[in-house]
View (cartoon, rainbow, N blue to C red):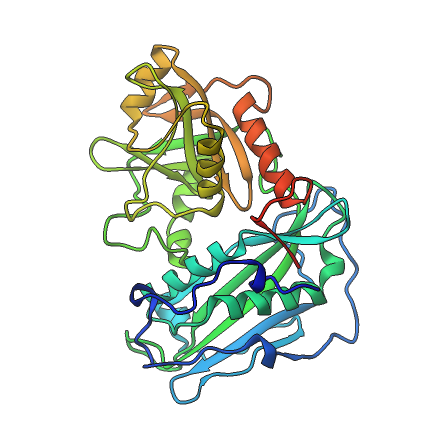
Amino acid sequence: MASVASATSAPSSHSKELENNVADNASSFKAADTVTQLAKTHKPKPDLDGLMFGTVFTDHMLTIKWSLEEGWQNPHIQPFGNLSIHPGCSALHYAIQLFEGMKAYRGPDNKVRLFRPMMNMKRMQKSAHRACLPSFDAAELLECIRKLVEVDQDWVPHSDSASLYIRPTFLGTEPTLGVKKPSSALLFVILSPVGSYFSTGAKPVSLWADSKYIRAWRGGTGDCKMGGNYGASIYAQYEAVDYGCQQVLWLYGDNHQITEVGTMNLFLYWINEKGEEELATPPLDGIILPGVTRQSILELARKWGEFKVSERYLTMADLQQALEENRVREMFGSGTACVVSPVGRILYQGENLHIPCEGSLPPLTSRLLKELTDIQYGRTPSDWSCVV
């Protein structure tokens, strides 16, 4: 099978912004050195009907170890199994941990594809830099992931409503207590066949908007995909459920800026204050995760050239006024897990704000979902789609 790395534009060298000084001139692992140990027995494939997100895992996993003394070790594809880590592991005590989320899709031609995977690799590099974890070559990691998916390709669902979720994870494994850069680390990748992220499927989701809790702040790690960002959000998520909502809409500042949802970037399709038809999403100012699906939606909409496309600040007051004046057309979230998901209701300051929804999928949401999934599943040729 063709190399994914060769089908993407990988930089020949990392910029200084992405370099990590944990070890000077640390050379990356090489995909060509991957050692493969195949599982002797194979688990049964799950029934996709009613499959819970992230509960079933494939037969194999990828592990790559790093140490300050020896640098990167050879990548290993091995049977899926538990990890053995020291009780003093820095990831357990100080949350020196990060992850990525991407998917493999099986098209009607039976080919397996990845969607813009180099964007995930570059975001993972950025997160690693922020977490003081060692640098690596993005193209080499992507090729290792391709090899893993190739080994477990039978797990990629034969369905246009399911996919194989790919979870690269990076841990600091320093075996001593003390807040410091880790002297050892483990990068691993696991795979899981998944259906819809939300139990309601493609139906509109409900959000709880409250300034009581804050997800991220400027100068923090909100623009990195770190486990601590998500662990700290669980308490608020359960409070949202207690209020009858599915997800938290995170607000920021005294003016209640709209930022993002627990698992999604957020978009507002409306007639703005100037009377312009506009698709707007909050800007990448350090507190927003730079989503791959978010960027793809912006590029698609700009390519259409049918309405204004903006990265701009939006507040709850802006949304309330627009709803009162019937200027809101649609609101939706985007992400690897959910792709595109319409928002039907926001609970804010004790009031239910009902977002216009024509059926379960409003027109723009439906159009974007179709265009994105057509590319992901190979129904529409695109250089965003990379064959494994």
